[in-house]
Length: 317
Image (cartoon, rainbow, N blue to C red; front, side, top):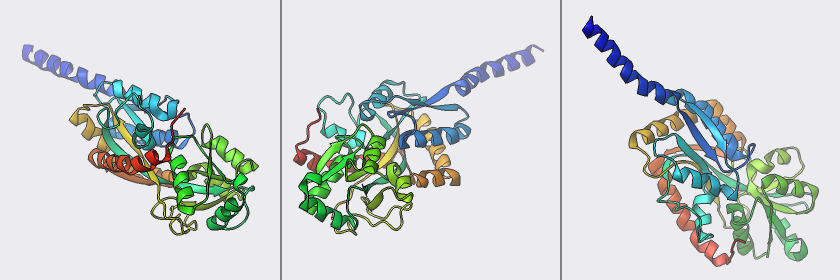
C-alpha cells in the first residue's frame, strides 16, 4: 500500500509541471493594428499552432513605430518559447540602415524560428493616371513632373525604396508621398489624390479586381500567383526587383527544445490547404523555412538594401 501510494504521489508530482506547461499561453506579438496582413497571418498561425503545441496561442497587437515596439518587447522576453513576434522583414533589414538608435540589434537580439511567407509589392495606379501599361504611365509622369508622385504605407519602408529604385531605373523623378498605413494610401489612390502607389498586393488587390484601380506590375522575380496576368517590373522593362518576407522570431537564446517544437508547429500549420489558400488570397506566398534558413535570408536582404538606402540619403524625421 505504501509503495502504491508513493508511486501515485510521484506520478502526480511529475504531472504538475506538465499540466502547468499545458496551461501556459504562447503570445505572438504583432507590431501593427488588427486587420492588416501581419495580423491576419499571425491569427492564422495561432489558430493552427494550438493543436501542434497543445497550448493556447494568442495574438497580441503592439502597434507603433513600424513594428519596432513589438520587436523591442520580444527582445526582452524569457527565452522559453512563450513569447514570439511575427515581423515583416523591413523592420529587420531596412530600419537598421535608417536608425542609429534602433533599440535592438536585428541579428543578436532575436532567435529566428521560421519563415512563414514571402511577398512582393504591387505598382498600382488609380483614376488620376492615364490608360496604358507601366511604361506609358511613367512616360506621362515624365512629361508631367507635377503629377509624378507615388504613395506608400510609410517612409523608410521597402515600398518607399522600391519606388526610388523604379525612379532611378526609369529615369523619371518620382516624389514619394508617405501615408500612415496602406489603407489610407489606397483610399487616396482611388480618390485620385495620388496617381500611383507601391505597396503589398493585399492593399489593392480587391480594388483591382473591382476595377477601381489597376495593378500594372509586381516587384518580385516571378509573377504573383494571385495576379497571374500582371507582369513583373523586369517584364515591363524596369530592371528592378524587391521582395520581402514574414518571419517568426523568439527572444535571444531561445531554448533549443522550444525552437524545435515551434519550428514543427509552424511547418504543420503551413502544410494545411486552407492556410495556404488564405495566404495566397492576400497576394502572399506560403513558404515555410526553418530558423537557420530564415537567418540566412535575413542576412542576404540586410546586405542587399544597404547600398540603395545609403545612396538615397534618406533620413527619418
